[in-house]
Length: 393
Image (cartoon, rainbow, N blue to C red):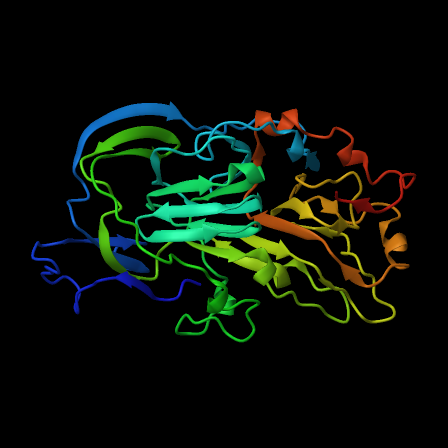
């Protein structure tokens, strides 16, 4: 998904002496899958490893709560309180060995630089905007952006706190990429892809910083603080295909069919053992006999998580902006009673906006998730007394 990109000044060949201003610069490989995957090369004015102090920090755990019964869940995400920075105050709700899913509602700016050494991060800006500062340069962030940050990226998020940011946070242990079926043999996104390289917004300009810097490092869910001799934003140039970028959910081009199309048509990203999909406003099925809502289904090999952003999600009632639903693999779910019948009298369009994460290994819920779980949700298919449509404010 990331097209080749270059910023600043780079030498004509890799791994050669380079003295653009008389002093030798330090080439650093930023590579995935050892030396065999996608990579970028960055050119530092100073030694990037030089540090004078390392201090241990806190743990960032999401321990499972071993539930005796696995049931469908509605997590009332808007009940999570505001507080802290976007880095150290993420509330983790659902997790397995491949991904952690949570929310940050920050009310303070991040000050120290930060690097996640164990996971790619996907931050979806439900509300708010800002700027991602990293060694690759500046990336402006808009509301409803996915911000994809490869592991090892040293960054600082400058948030517009007045816009009351609310951020869906994913930590993914594997490489986050565009779905392989969207890519040609040379890696280019093809004509069948629901977006193109033009929709990917990478770093716009380099940032030059000098002097010492404090770096918060997370590895294996434990924080440490490094006092660096040299600021890591001393890059004079870089090139490659691994860098942070933003992609706005409204740049996803939806597909429709004569009859209902299944969720893979909405897929936006893939990673080992999970997919991320975007549900955006679109026209629905146009056959006169079509059923406009999803059919009932059992995801036999995956758990399904939906995060509700905006619009009218007609298949559910009691769901609001900021809600999560977690449907457990092996159990059926679908429209609640009365929803299909009610949908037949409406126009075949939807204004729903939601992010879906399907995981192919079971998710566990944390205590924070159980604290905001709606105890009535597993029984919401029992009665049609409340009707079948939910308006998300």
